[in-house]
Picture 1 (cartoon, rainbow, N blue to C red):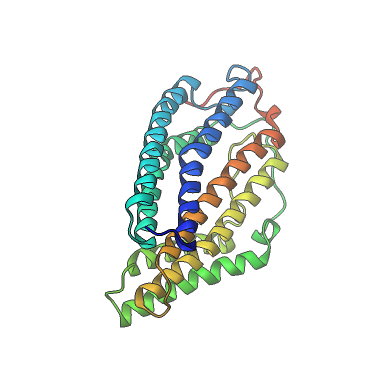
Picture 2 (spheres, rainbow, N blue to C red):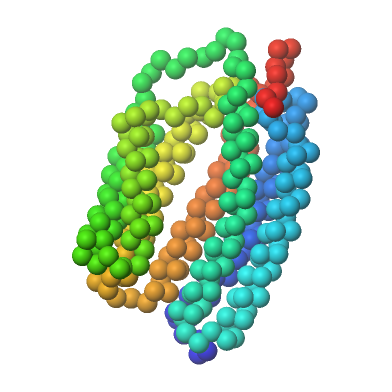
Length: 291
């Protein structure tokens, strides 16, 4: 395989993907939870830890070898691709396959994350409870520009999927793109016209932290909708043949979006440790731990 700019670009993104998703992000994620238990032990902060640390450690013990094994396999695939792949598209295709496998631990960890959130929300509320009297709107948390971009890009993807279904029903990716965009529009519509203020992550979270969490969630929703909407639209237009460029660039764009999302999540966790008010989770005589 003769090296050129396109191959070099894909190789750099491929290598970055391996480091980011199989080593850097998992390590930072586990370090965050380790520091959380070290600085704020369950005995002193029972409202912060709805699940026993031993259970989390057992889960982490499964994730560590899983990430390392997948990372080692991705490295071997990367090296083999550099040697044997006969085109940039072949190299990018292997990168995309590795991306799907590297995201597998995330899907496995989702039930654990849901259990933690349910445990936090099910804790007995503080007494006296604080009440929010102000009626918030989504624009209190995120710029109208990003709201408009997120809705516009997802609507564009959905419109492309519908038009292609009517006139070119055999086009690849119509149903996943259309269904995904439709669901995202429903979520954004619910955020705008339904319950504009999301519930607290737990009943003890302070007001400033609650505002930051909501702001962070709304930003993530609309910014990611804009990014994935643009990527989905280009994918559909490419699949139907209306625009022409190497499909390798679609794979590169998808990998870059996922890596930036992972990096944003790591930065969010680090900021959480330094800015969040953990004093509200201290034990008192009436505190109970959710099971």
